Image (cartoon, rainbow, N blue to C red; front, top):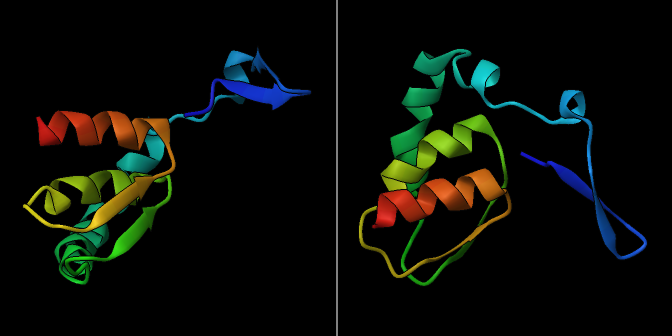
Length: 89
């Protein structure tokens, strides 16, 4: 959820209406998303480096990745990193 943008090396706050919310899309088609999560997590193998971009489906994927693995997860969105820390603790 971006609350600021970079401009000439400095950050400035975005207007509240410009910030993206995960609340609405997170509820859309949860049945279809749920069917994808475990198979997607099972595709990740030990030793891989995995880039997980921001998005509501990927947010729901994180609990499936919490099993012990030796893969490196690169999370691009602050909300994903925040949730990952909670799951892993």
